[in-house]
Length: 56
Image 1: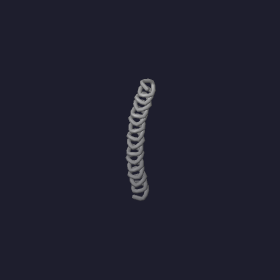
Image 2 (image 1 turned 180 degrees about the vertical axis):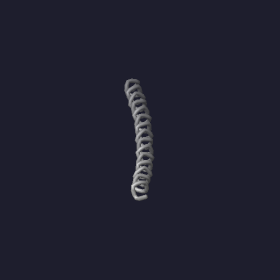
Image 3 (image 1 turned 60 degrees about the horizontal axis):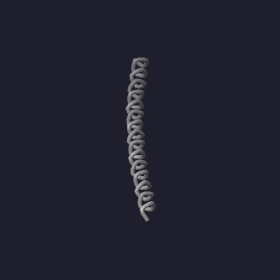
Image 4 (image 1 turned 60 degrees about the vertical axis):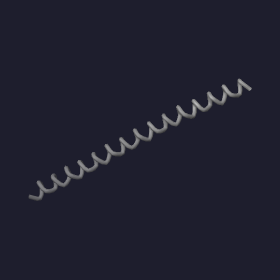
């Protein structure tokens, strides 16, 4: 019985650790998406500026 309890405690600890790792991965992914979006906006601004300079 005690071995079973220790095994369950170990499994719960592994699940908790895995959940924290997954949360960090999601956070990192969202940060990357935000950076990509900012880069995209900056590229749009750069392209508009190039077009305006060439047109004018």
